[in-house]
Image (cartoon, rainbow, N blue to C red; front, side, top):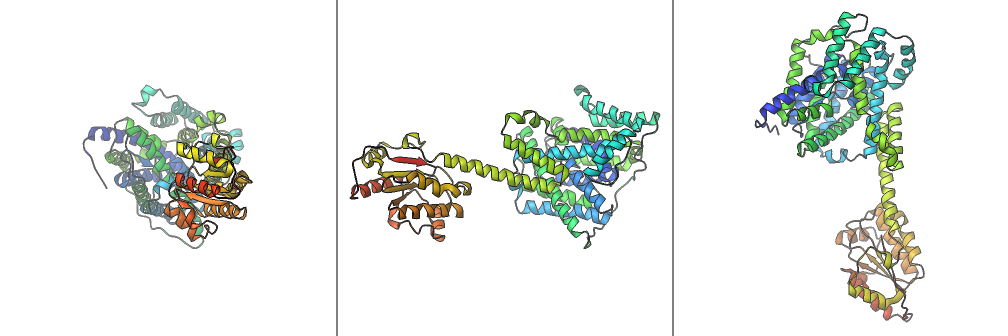
Length: 554
């Protein structure tokens, strides 16, 4: 599982060191924003980064505190009044859930979230981060936790600014947004903003600073859960586990695209869970795979787990030696850095081009964004996934039903010369429905009605071709039952072709084949057509109509 490779040692060392330098100001900023303090941000980056790299399934990934995780954690910290034993029990439990996700092999399912939903909730998180930091840019601390108190505090902060803090925050924004790309290879913009903003504050006093920061190794925290906080802790742990898993696996996909490799999603969840568990036991804030730090690591040479380990060891050295120097960092600098983080999380590229795409996708994205900002993240993601899934089923059902009702000339099915000749002999006395793929429950709802309308008064034989149907669910089985019984009551004989054993077993098990005769099942379509023609030619109502038979596909 550890799978250490030494063939890229130089690149891994340089990549890990660079990622650690980038992670330093972000860890401090996230720790301060969480309420647990800057040192908690560093502990989180160290432990999550180390264990996720060691046991995870994405070799080049750098993990640590991220925007989505901090938004949830900050709310939990405020709700539980900063009680360390309760707050970090939430982090530990979230790690346990992530390990369970991996052990139960749910990684491939967690990634099955529609892009508009991911875009909406990530953009919403970006808006929340900016809202939470806006007052701090003006030198004020918003009262209470959450988005609404932060938004209501903005007018007062704007009307009564601390001009030193405002100047430093504007300088920070200028650096993180406009730092020359050539210089970024030497000093990353967040680190440059951290150093320059802190130096300026030493000469121009007046902006609130972090103050004393503990140094040395963290102490062990004994988690606790009481009856009053159980529901809060469980709900927050599930949210953290889901967000951390989604965030990490999305970053893993980015790493795959850059390195031309393939990650192990379930192993990645186990590694992230171990990292968050250990971080919780030692007072570190939760984390996940961090896209920006991972990209920096890969671009500067990191390819294996060694780079993630080096990143964490660098931050550990900072905690042991340089923590006292961080006490002079102004809140406004960290606020400016986080505003840039929030802006980067917002899906600006999609918003610019969304009007050219499907309107429903844009509406879904906006709905999830609004729910994220003004309700909560789990509601936003759950509602988005449900609405996205229902919209997809509706689109698939419409597409399946649209293929029905056409004549043989409009069908996409290719028929052999013998089949064409048999259709000509039969005239307009055969109606054939070719189910061109799996029958979704969305299409099944209207399937019986569609077949009934398209075969009304048309011939004595109905052929249902199941050659392209690998499986059916209960909804589709009931639709087939409706089709068979409607045909039987109308005096039509039903012929079945190409139905596999599993589909027939489902129909038999549900008694959905009650109107279908056992001697009318055929292995191939041509056999069913021959039988239908023989039945028609032996029927007393047979005529020599030269009209084309109706042949439909669904």
